[in-house]
Image (tube, rainbow, N blue to C red):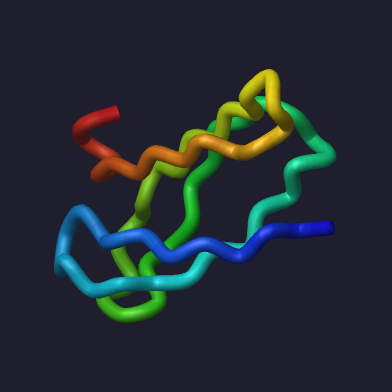
Length: 62
C-alpha cells in the first residue's frame, strides 16, 4: 500500500499531497510543489513500526 500524506510547501506554505512509495525504504528525492512549482526535498525514513516519517525542506536548505 502506498500512503498518501499532506505536507506544507516550504516555499509557498500551501498544503500539497504526496504519494509515498514505502517499498523503497529510506529515501530522499526532489518533487516539485503542485502550487508554486519550486523543488522540494522530500526525505522519507521508515520507522521500526513500518510507518513512514516524512520531512520536507527547500532545495537550498537540504
